[in-house]
Image 1 (cartoon, protein in one colour):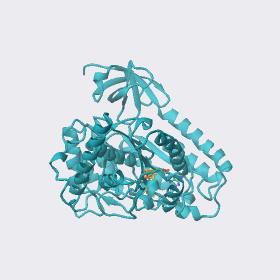
Image 2 (image 1 turned 90 degrees about the vertical axis):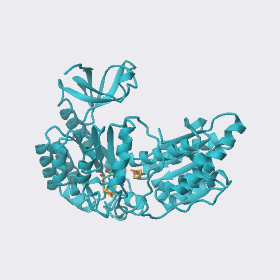
Image 3 (image 1 turned 90 degrees about the horizontal axis):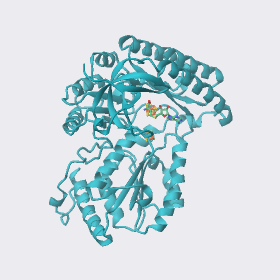
Length: 484
Ligand code: SAH
Ligand code: SF4
Ligand code: F3S
């Protein structure tokens, strides 16, 4: 689904251009020549596989990487059959890192059986010096390693990797570059994520993201709008605007524009029917944003508003810059203005110094805010963050009991919220054939809840009216309704 690029017209014997993205297109053309020669030699296509370990932003980066791999002549495949495997890693919690190390062992096995196979690692984990050391020492069979700041250089780095026998490692510590107009391949034909900003300036004390993603940089509004308009012309009707803290969008732009202002412009784009965004930091959520959401019939009735903790003492230590009361009154205000909104959240249990009483405060907020869903995480100590150096780190066994208390409350609250729409007929964007029953189609409501209903493949990507007949925990079963 990437735009066809005329790589054949590029003179690959000339010196590489110095400006971007022209330089990357030049290296794509060079890679393509090697790939074509290899295909002919082997008498079969070459296959590439990318695995994404992280968040939506990570997933969006993967779409860019696969876009380039397709442009240079690879086809997509499963890991074990691929000639090129790339892991796009995440380091937000230690279990994400451990999964990568575990899988690398398996990959090594494939590589032994498949001479010529290349393995690459990229993403947030690669921005940590200790990780690079470990890879050099314990995983020497890896061919290419690069980080988040120079992802746009992938074609160039991949070329170096194709013509070299040694491990290629290219990590930048920082960048303010935002390179536009590289190819990308969408996972879905009808919906897409769009980066509106990169990096984060918040430095929540537990979080490694600002260190591995760098300072906050917003994309120019005109680039964002141009990308969305092109997606709309290509059949995309639902978009998700992506950033670590979308509410602070636009601050560093030549012509400052607020997130609410950006949304108003996005709304005007013809062909876009649904607008989502991730993530909102409570401290920066403006009245203007609530007003724009309320007036809009395109902005979805869903807000992901990470709480992290309900205890003001812990929130202060986390450097979240809001109190329990401020969070609750924000939720009240949003619900008053937009009554049918669904609010979801993230919660961390086991932050240094957190007592069972602090956890009770969190439970109190969950009950009062009435979250539709919450992702609950056990605190993971990230080297280099202020929280890692705090005294009073809590032993895992102690955290587990508190985690269970929170999880129980989240489930109870979500159950109470679910079923709110029972009996109503609502618009559903049909996303896929049901994974367990082929006679059912699966779609999503504006509030992000899944709906399963009898239907055929021809409905994929369509908006249909579905009567919500039965609520089963986190999803509905329904029937398509025809006519007005
Ligand atoms: N920028 C987003 C969050 C990105 S990370 C925001 O501020 O809302 C996604 C979630 O991972 C966070 O909301 C937090 O709940 C969790 N998280 C981040 N660092 C963590 C850590 N060290 N241990 C456990 N969970 C963490
Ligand atoms: Fe991490 Fe906080 Fe930035 Fe979110 S806002 S990415 S939790 S530092
Ligand atoms: Fe993980 Fe990086 Fe996203 S650390 S959560 S992939 S920004």
